[in-house]
Structures are given as structure tokens and as C-alpha cells.
Amino acid sequence: MSKTIGESTTTTRVFRFASGELLNLEQKQIEAIPYLSALVSAANSFQSVCDENGCYILDPHVQYKNFLLAIESLSFQSVQQIFTDLPKHNNIVGIVALLDFLAIGPQPNPTLDEVDSAFFSHIIFDTEFHEYRSVVRESNIRDMAVRFAIAIAREEYDLKNSEVIDRIYWLMMFVLSAYDYFGPRLRHHAQKIAEYCFALYDAFLNLNQRFKNLLIHSPLSIQINLSLMSKSTFQNYYKFILVSDKHRIKSLHLSNPFVFDSILSSINIQLIFIQLETLILNNIDSKSLENLLNHLTLLSSLVSLSII
Image (cartoon, rainbow, N blue to C red):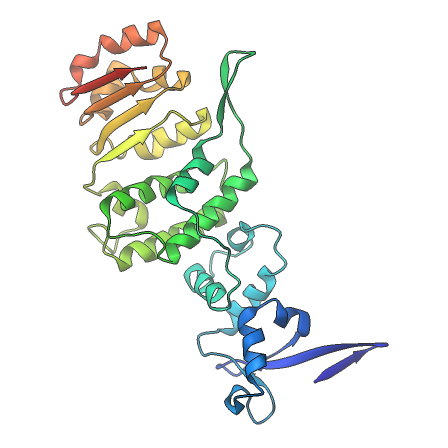
């Protein structure tokens, strides 16, 4: 059908949802969504594509409300807007599934190494001032966080593999705890995806608890690399991760100067690193090293110390 506006003619088509709603879309909108383009192309070969009124019949899985959000996403300038522009009451898992069904979801899925690099490889050593500086492109970090969460929803990672679960746990906890980088909507939708997907695979002990509680009570041992972490990010890690997971920490890698005095005190060593077996230190100054050596005897499980 055609709609005339002034002297210009814009081709529109009507699509019918299983719930009964009708929606007019312009040709440029249809062409931007591969699923709709394929549906329109199939109309000449299959009569069942359209109803008796000439409306294109959408798959029952395409819900009206979520479809409007998918249409809106076509105008987004960055991937992060899928989460940051979406109110919390919406079902993010269903929306991600719809974006993929329509073939307009973000591509490609990042590997866990790519996610780790995007989150933590932004610490550089300033040779002029002889100090570590954080070079953060916050927009890039937020985009990666959304791509990471969407990849989890797509079952891109092997959630039956304990090592993979361990890595996803730390990366997701960074997203949930780094308030300086990630806003409330992004963190909310990321958590909802994690809760849903981990529950599917029975990855943790109690499926009725919230995601964070499941992770805190996980029996898996963990390895921590704090060598590429800004001071503000470390403070969030210390508060939300290190303290709550002290019973799981088996290996620790440190190199940032501001970390040494924060956690390598006698009290922190004794209370937090009770299961620590391997400790790796980079660029530790002599004063911090001396202080550390005086308290290593408190680490009853420590079997390996490397100073680089």
C-alpha cells in the first residue's frame, strides 16, 4: 500500500502481530530488519504470509511491545543503549532473543579474553611522572559490558565448564560493582541475564537466590589478577569481591603500587587470604616488600611466592 505525503510517495506495509496489533512500517525500516525483508519477499511465493486483508503475519514469538523497542534500537548510536535506554521493568532476555530472531542483534560475540582486555588493559605507566595512570574510554567499556552480557544470553560460553564459569563470574562481578563505569540500568539488565542463564545450567547451588548470592557461595576456587586495575576499580573489587570471596582466593597477582599497602597488612592477610596458595608480586617497592615478608608466616596455605 502507498501513503502520499505532499509530492513524495512512501511505501509502507502493514504487519499483524499474533496478539492482534497492526503496525505500519516504511520500506527503509523493513530493509533494516532482515527478518521483515525475508517475510515480504516470501509473500509472492507463499499465500500464508499475508492474511485476507493483505497484512503480513508475524511469527507468534514477535511480541508487539518488544518489537517497538527493537525498532527503536535501529537508531541507537552505540551498543550500550540497548541496556541504558531500556527501563528496568522490561524483559531484557526476551528483547535480546527478539533482536537475534530479527537478525539485528550486535555482532560479533566477544571472547572472554576480549572482554577481559577491554575491562582491565587500560593501566599505563607514565615514564615522565613515574606513576601508573588509568586511560579509560568509558564508552568502549560500557559497549563491551553489553556485548558480554548479550553473549551470555546467546549461550556463547560453555556454562558447564567450571573454568569458564569462574571467568564469567569475575567479569560479571566487575560490571555489577564498578558503579563509576556502569549505570543502574546497565547493571540491572546484565544481572538479569546472568541470573537467567546461570539458572538454566544449574551452575550454582541455589537457583532461588539472586545472582550475587549464588556467586558468593560458589565452592569454586579462584585466581585474581590485580595487575591492570585502576585505584577506584580496585576499591570496588575489595569491597564487593575480595572480602566476600576470601574463602575462595587461591592465587593473587599484584603489581599496582596503591594495592600493596591497601591489602598486604597483617590484618588483611590473615582475614582475607586464608586460602591463598600462590602470590605473585610485580614492581613492589622495598618498604612494602619488607612489610609483606614480616607477615607471610600468617599465610598457612601459601606454597609459592614470586617477586618479579
